[in-house]
Image (cartoon, rainbow over all chains, first blue to last red; front, side, top):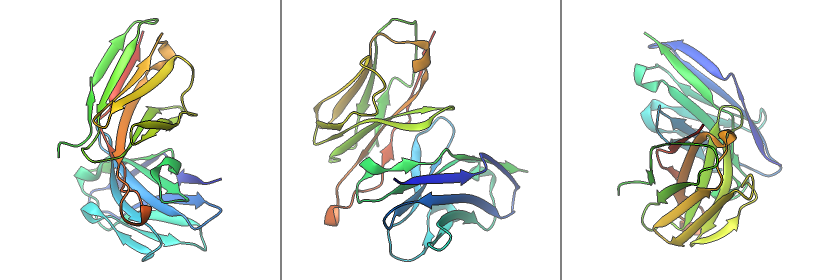
Length: 114
Length: 117
């Protein structure tokens, strides 16, 4: 069975500092991995996805994530945090092409300190 | 496209009342998903449809919950009778099967915040 674990339900960083949100996955087959972001009072929207092509994936708003098979990780990073990055971030995994098997993590709330 | 549209945005009702949540997916999308989000359980998949047909409703918590998709542009999630533990944010999402059978990412609506008192 597939699963994702997000380390840290809350992360605070200063504006301009590095953002690092951690995600580890478990999957019996090569996975597809995603990061979604949820702004207050909105639905989730896709930040980026890994689908077995390049291991370093670039997404919207300056975010990127690196797939590391040896570490079963897919951590999300951004070199310089902006106030507008404050949101909740969800890592998700699926073992197939379809969204019907998508499993979400519990989320990490990112707070940006001015 | 206007995106996935959900209504109402907020619903407050008393225990025992019927609640109907509505969703209009993105035009052309052939998958529709209903999720529930709570602090305790996070995001839970309740049911999903493919080409208007319910495929898997194993996430529906009880018989009090039912969902329909009468056509490609409309779906409802009904709770009857509602209970305080049903209080949550309910999301509808849609996606499209693209090339090589790979689904597009999920497109979420802004959700309906349900409060049952």
